[in-house]
Amino acid sequence: MSGNAYQDDRGNNDRSITSDRSPGEIPYHQGGQAVKVEGDSAFLIGDAMTGGYGKGPDILHECTVAVNPGEIAVIVGPNGAGKSTAMKAVFGMLEVRQGQVRLDGEDITALSPQDRVAKGMGFVPQNNNIFTSMSVEENLEMGAFIRRDDFRDTMAQVYDLFPILKEKRRQAAGELSGGQRQQVAVGRALMTKPKVLMLDEPTAGVSPIVMDELFDRIIEVSRTGIPILMVEQNARQALAIADRGYVLVQGRNAYSGTGKELLADPEVRKSFLGG
Image (cartoon, rainbow, N blue to C red; front, side, top):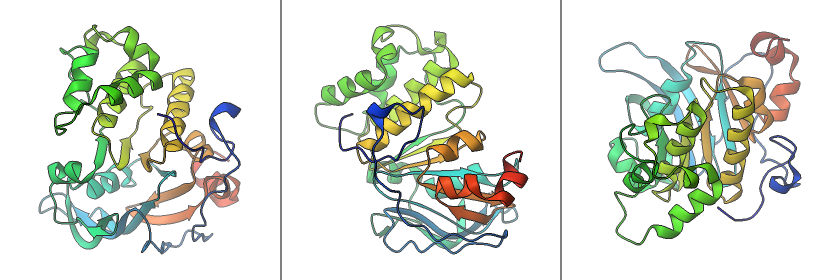
């Protein structure tokens, strides 16, 4: 997964995977009001999404999230804020009753999740994201099911990114640790050669050391130019690596800004980051 460096001093301060690029300008507003994010030029945007599951009530209310190539965009907020729901709406797993989802300028609001994968969206759910009875390598091969070309180079890149997976490639994925399972899940998504990568709680249930390692690998993926949209409960750590941050409250945008801006905002710190 080699490519141009995009990130600005984030992750574990490992200077081999950071650079001096300034994050893109993002509309930002203090005070807890909904923020309109101008996303006409965003590579992936869920624009003013309102919707919910089936015939149930709306969970999202004019919610907007966006990400551009080489960026990491992080969605944070309290439990029940609609973070994972916003991710699923972008991926087509619930009905967007108002608003749009656009990928590379194309309106994909009406497409199924399967069709969105074919368009270039890679999605890693929080739970049940690997085939436990299959080997690590078989899991990665399953990620290439939509491809008709030779995917061996991509698998070699995944092994370069996650060396432990190469070491355990013949082992059943269900026998791996939680952090290693997450690496398998991310690696399988990368096997599709996605145009954008979406991660729902990638560090859920892992130790702080494993969380730091996963974040470093996520930074490496973003350095190749792949936009990454990520939901995270570990808000402080996630915002530290984010080019864009979105704080959701009750399905609405409450705060938006760069990761550094949100970490520095006293209201965000008091309300969502423990002071």
